[in-house]
Length: 382
Image 1 (tube, rainbow, N blue to C red):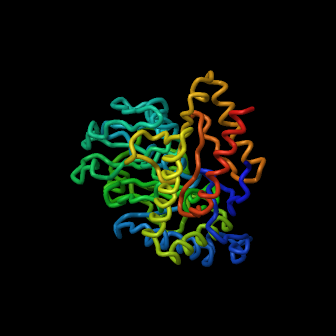
Image 2 (image 1 turned 30 degrees about the vertical axis):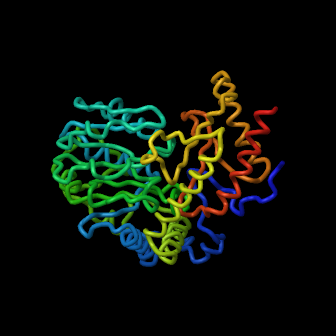
Image 3 (image 1 turned 90 degrees about the vertical axis):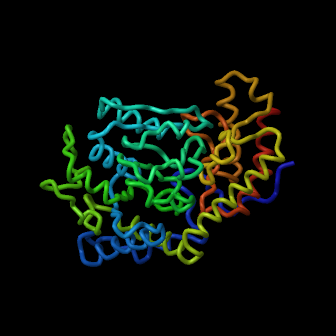
């Protein structure tokens, strides 16, 4: 039977992600549209986003947090193009975005001393292989595989290399100890449901020291440059952004931060995300046709929750037909107005990807599960 109860919020995309509960365009009424971001008011608004972000994430006082162009991708490439080179690099990849950083390091920067540790979708490399005398590049949470690092114990406190972490679908939803990292990047479009295009780059004192002591062997585009005359341009991290940010998007980011503060800050954001994972886990455990893509429970993401279809009917289909069947499930639920954008990433195995970050209500996930069962039976029986 077709279920009757529908999720109140049907947005389950893994990026851009669901807006906070109760959001409406009225949240942007005070946006400084038509104003310069260099004006006193514009700079103040940008600085407020920086200050609230620092406080909410518990960024150490001697770390720098700045708004940069081109979302998380821009932030990561700024870091890699500016910082890598003096040491060998250990690059970790277990899904498409991590593999993208490996490609940048090996085929674009063409660094001579690179070790790549990779794993198939659903798995994670042996983190014990990492050498912390080298620079280490990794994602905290694999957005397209639903696999996250289980903890931070593998990151050496006495490291000589830099820990460079793409944390875009982890910050504000997971325990990401920024003090154990040298570079942290993320996008507003993820856990707090902000709009796209802008990224955030967090640098430790050790990363700043590297910027000032290392001159890359390759040209740096203007939007990547964080030093001038060999000195760190701290103004970039104090509201003097490299390029022009959208003041509408700045206002939306500020709205998300204020909401997060009002509900209890980072602990409540993490609790909500983990509660969503728990709800999915309960459904998976009672559902025969589906399982987590992440093989180890400790590595299962609480944000980009990736599921595989394990019913013998599905696994017995040719690869192309499996992909088409998974797409039909997602398409059917979108047509019904039940769930939007739950298809897996184009390079990931066929299945379902449901966002469980802090802006998603557990009740909406629980309303979704009977519809997933219904849609699967419809596709299987067609």
